[in-house]
Image (cartoon, rainbow, N blue to C red):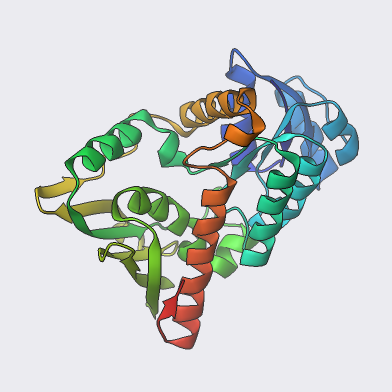
Length: 301
């Protein structure tokens, strides 16, 4: 599968570009970015072609891997889908439900394969945990604390304007929801409140009566960084395993494999737990939580 890489930042180069270049069944055929100098630098690193024109790149590839801000990604995804190119997208899919709807509409209309890279959902140890927990069943609650600290010198994500403006809810929230929903079901109602250091605290009701609470920030005190999700159920307590087993590059390689399998299926059978429809569902929940936080009220979905 010939990939075009859309994006030139740290994640684009160190994760997506590196994974595609190393994959035995993929080829990094070109790089496009809004900053042409950076596109040339990334292309040189991976011995591929920089494209100043996006349409020219789309004409030369089978699929695109997208690593740009979510609001930019949504429009590029629509453009690539309409060109008949398969999509390997980053989370969150978009920053508004309307933009996410446009991506899903384009994917459905063209029949292309589309995945959203929720990193943990492409780690075998996490997928095994979810499969085992689903067989156990009886889960009625989950607590998650995701406190990162990225706004300090040297962090490659600290200069990201969209992360600065949208915070942990939109950056970390998709990861949390991608683990929560397979075990607790769809979210039907959310409430949220702000806390110190740009913390957002979300309580969600799920379709079968289960409940979850998440605390998220990108600006935790450096000595108060924490990352954990714990499920509680009729049969005990289950802690989501850490991410030390599978690197982001390896996880993205697994996503390439899943996209290839999805593309090989009949268009009407192209369904995956992390497809564009699921990506849109996550955006709708995040938008509802954002509304709940700003307006200080519960929001139904």
